[in-house]
Each structure stands twice: as structure tokens, then as C-alpha cells.
Image 1 (cartoon, rainbow, N blue to C red):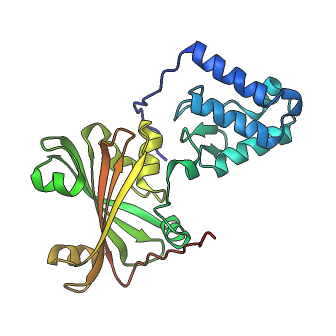
Image 2 (cartoon, rainbow, N blue to C red):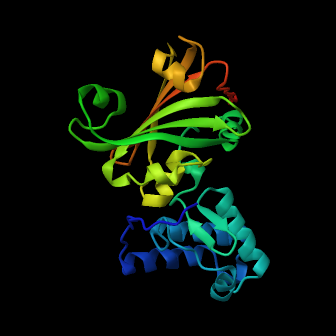
Amino acid sequence: MRQECVAVEFHVVSQAKLSKEITAALRKHPRSKLTPAGLAQLLKDEIGAGRYAVGAQMPTEVEMQQRFGVSRYCARAAFQALKDSGMVSARAGIGHQVLAAEPADQRYMQSSSTLAELVQLAQTTLHVLDARDGIVDAALSQQTGHAVGAEIVEITALRTKRGANLPTALLNLSLHRSHAMMARYMEGEAEPFHIVLERRYGVKIAEVQQRIISVDADAKSSRILQCAARQPCLKITRRFLDAQGAVIFASVGLYPSDRFSHDTAFKVNR
């Protein structure tokens, strides 16, 4: 990804509160008995307590060995557990960076993506068609949840499956004016938009509201998607909210019926 100067919102935690929380965590996981799972949980506790904010760099494996008196294997396995939980990322030559303050499975009550959809997203990229400033009117407010009069950036983009000639979806995104650089960050991006936004700006999504309806593509959309006139499509509207219920951004996607499917499986608890 391109390196840009971005504003990251850090959570300020008092030293006294942090020390108390970390001391409690250390009592819970004594150094002499730390397993990879125990070290991973301790690091999760520290991230959650604010020691390492979203976007911050984590200590190296060597620093973890020295601090906790654990083996290199233990430190490496703990970092792998954090990666698997979605809390940190790892890049060669850069190290580990905090992506989220909580494990992914605790942040969402229900995943918005099935395995089939996740695989499909992993094989697609975004291409920005247009980015423009706008003011939210009543109609857009009703659709996206943004407050009337709010200053936003509207981005139109195509999501295309790698190796395919036809786009998978036409996306219209609306986000706060302060996040305008996302139009540059998302070009050619395969990772979901909301993950990139969280990492770049330090915002935290607490809830996703989704509405799916069936529509026919209008003339303009048909032209951009290169599909038949009045092609049946799925229209997926999502609102991404923070912990206070405010809209961080919203997306409206148009997915031609012959290029996209959404499969769901449920397990019965007895």
C-alpha cells in the first residue's frame, strides 16, 4: 500500500489505570508459566487497555522475549494468534501493527460475509471511477444515515474479479470529508474498504446495518456494469456505525445477479 501521512485517533489511557490493568493481567498469566496462548491473551489485554493503540507498532519478538522471559517460539506463536484473531497485521521488514482493539469474533455478533463471499472478495480489486465532495440532502440521509447537511465525499467504484473482463459490482460510498484520502488508498485494493478505513484513520466500527433488495439496473448502471438493460441485480446497502451509533460511512452496491451470490449456513444449537 502507498505510504501517506494520516491522522490517527489514539485513545488516551491514564498511566495509573494502564498499570493497574497490566499488573492484573500479569498476575493472571505469571511470566514463568506463560504459554503461547497465555502470552497472546496478555497482549490482547494490553491492546484492549490502550497500551498499543490502533495503528501503533507492536514490540518485536526479541523485545517480547526479553520482557516476558519466553522463548522465541512462544513469542512468534503469540503473534500468530493475534494475527488469526484479526487484531494485528504482519509485514516483512516492518513488523506487527495493531489493526483492532478487540478480536474479530468479538466485534461482530454475526459476520457480514460467508466463507464463499470472503473468498470472492479476496480475489477482487477496486477501481475508483469518481470522487467528489457533497452535502447530504434528505434523500441521501434516509438511505445512508448521514445527518442532513453533513459534508461528505462520495466515491463511485467498480469491484472486479481478478482475471475477469466484467465487473462484479458498482459501489457508491459516502464518508466524512476528513476521510477523503480513502479515494486514493482504495485504488487497486483487495482488502475490504472498512478494514482499510479502520487501519488508516484509527476509527472503530461497532455495528453494521445491512439491507438487501432486488432491483433492475437502470440505463447508466447497465452501461457501467456492461450488463443487459434492466438486468436483475442485488442492491446491498450497508451502514457502518461507531459505538455511539453515528455513521462512519455507508455503501450502496449493485451486484448483477449472474455475477454474485450470497450463501449462508446456520448451525442448530440443541
